[in-house]
Image 1 (cartoon, rainbow, N blue to C red):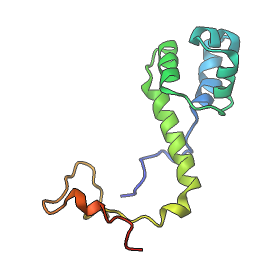
Image 2 (cartoon, rainbow, N blue to C red):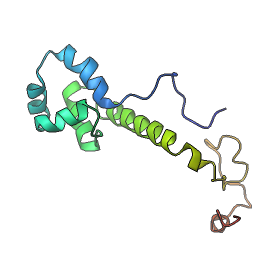
Image 3 (spheres, rainbow, N blue to C red):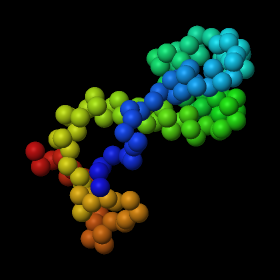
Image 4 (cartoon, one colour):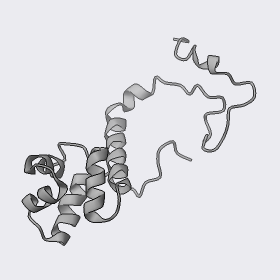
Length: 129
């Protein structure tokens, strides 16, 4: 199994893209109307729609109320977008890190540390260089 999240093969989408391309046309309201309904300035909405500003938890709550789908979708989109962008930007840097968890070459989802594992084992992390 791979190390990354399960994906559909498509690049991560900024929440502003979903709002701009799908939600706003379906609602049929102007940007000024949507900004007013969200309780934000047109400039704030524009920054999200042009993908220059991330969707914060507060904005995710507002969007979730407006769209009736809650904040989780908006936060998940933003999180995946941020992680994919950061992963690409730091790909070469991440090769210098080695796992500090025993048997970390396999998936750790749902597993617990082995009985011999101690927090102090992490204190020497990276000092082998």
